Image (cartoon, rainbow, N blue to C red; front, side):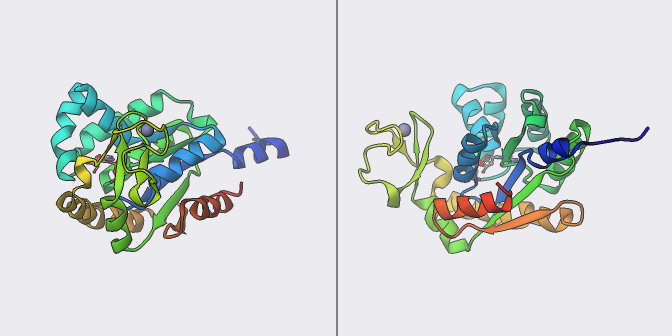
Length: 230
Ligand code: ADP
Ligand code: ZN
């Protein structure tokens, strides 16, 4: 059988927003992923957000994951693989998605490749955000989480330290437990030793787009849009 795609179909395929956003803790993955999710109307799958919600609700997953998260270690590949598969069962991946926080180990990258193969996802956009280590530490130490609306903001952008800049509620800003100095250093080490090697491991089989994420949120967002051709 001969396969025929109309020009319209090809254009449609090439604009599918199937995105993985990758990079060190603090580089701004979550912030950029949220904007992209709203801009293109695609679901944002954030493993960090899913885990934090599970911890807050004290579900089985939450209880199993809490200690690792609090110390800045990784949750097991087994648990994360299950969580990933479940997340993809709940969306229509053909309509696009942005995946944030997975893979974090080479084993997870292998799991992802199989999941994508099964779903017929052939050419996802793999975006890697980069910046210097001192900037990562600075961003993580000055990061605050709103317990009401879940927005992450940076102290340097907050006019009133007692008020969430996103929802305006007072006294809801906290420092995430894993944003304490010693935990931050551990997370950056884990990234260097376990997560970053994914780039070398997968670069022959996946096209990767490197974006310098040192500039401000809008500039980085623009760079991503250009890279995505949108
Ligand atoms: P970060 O700001 O470091 O990117 P996230 O909010 O994405 O943090 O994740 C917070 C924590 O959740 C991680 O430090 C880790 O303990 C756990 N976690 C998230 N995704 C994964 C994953 N794919 N594999 C293992 N652990 C994970
Ligand atoms: Zn808020």
